[in-house]
Image (cartoon, rainbow, N blue to C red):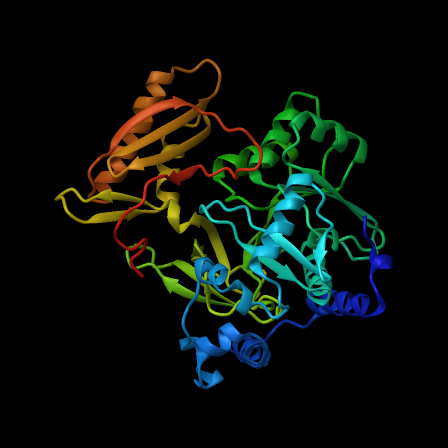
Length: 456
């Protein structure tokens, strides 16, 4: 495991500077002050990117950088198509993909290309994305990450169990002196994780909610004797049905980290509120027109901390919901009520009068399922077509499944009436999910539509 002793002098200085600045920097006096500071950081990054990235230089043309918020928006497909000319390290997509895939095949995640860490996204949208991080960027990321997620100071001894589908030099870099970091491969079975946790006795567990739930079940049946002091949910949407069970089992609040290929985007404050990391990235908001709350948006990311693979005006495939009220912590960073999930998992259902398909957001489905009965322990809802929903349920012992299915059907029907939509055909089955390389998506759309995904 890597500690700060494994960092060179320059990287150690970068690591410590970003840790201290993130953890102890004086808060901005207002939202306006933060936005002025962000603008200065973005302008510095844009000048570097224009000088070193042929793709962005051609995309922006001679337009003044002061108008950057009107530059074209890109997405994963565009980034991957122009990968060779977008990155500033001269790394070819073919070579990077070969390196990343070989690392996943061998489960050896140490190899790099010319000192640059290469990573591969999980590809839940059907296409996998590559990311590149330089040693300096890696050190900066590690400093920022530790400042935001560690409960105590850097010099306090701590053990972290990190559950990932694929390890990376990037994640290994969070080891820092007295901080011990241990990687748990999600392709291994739960029993092995339990044995290691009982020996390792880590104080911090960072894992997808589906894994945390499995560990909670192992705790309840007595096989898992170890217990954390802090729980961090990563990689998947934290669903209420999982959050309640995990909190009840361990007696701890659940912290969250919103980290993806495109950057370290959000983390929870001491009050447990998820805040955008607006000291690392600028996040524009494309608000969703059909959202009655007016608080759902698709993030447009501009990262002012990365140069090797610049992320400028990058549209994520996620929907977030802003918090309705300010967080008691007083931070000027945007507070997030919920990460809804992927745009591709928004259901589209025909309106009652026929014709137009109407978006039905994942949280609407979640609330309808959970409101139907308190005996629902786990669920999945999959839309296979415009008029077909498959619902998987795991229920408490000793309850009548037909009765609960009737209650769920009635709750879904009531939701569709409120939204003025036709009720799709509903089929029910037992809940099944095998932990492994595929993320758990409790609300999932498995059919494509011809119209735009979201009216923005």
